[in-house]
Length: 224
Image (cartoon, rainbow, N blue to C red; front, side, top):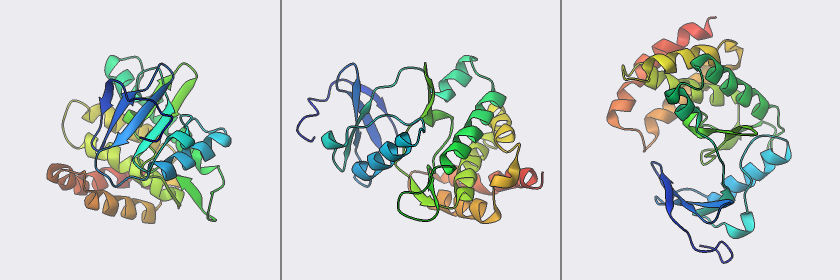
């Protein structure tokens, strides 16, 4: 860890590739355990979109490293947690995700003539803080065509919707609300999102097998 972060405290949460530790009441440390992230690059994007008014966590780049990202501690449930607790409906969740995507794509790109993309925006990556929704986990961010961002979110939701698990029905409703205006989702964006999901090393074989059904679920929305 970079000097100045302080010792990492108790483990607060664990994802597929990273763990989050407590630093103090105000700050947390997210540590990559796989070694393929670039936390400094990710943090730079988070700082940039925050400068443009986008709801991303505040970061301390000077105290971060390639594998460790120091960021502001957030309070509140994730959108997924709120859906499970019944404090948020699927329609509202889909509308919020759509608004967050539109707001992000209104921000000028940092290094290109395109747009900043999140590329992993789904209910478990939105924290419902007292100040409003805040988007976390920017590890996949890059610049490109906004249609890819819409396609990625749609595919993630569709994979859950066709899996016939307990979240299938809410995921279908969120997808429908997300794509109320389907004009943002392009053919190229959906095709590339499907290709990337299939190549994602964190996907299980079962999740990859669902991509064909996921595409079938999404396409009718594209036709309005």
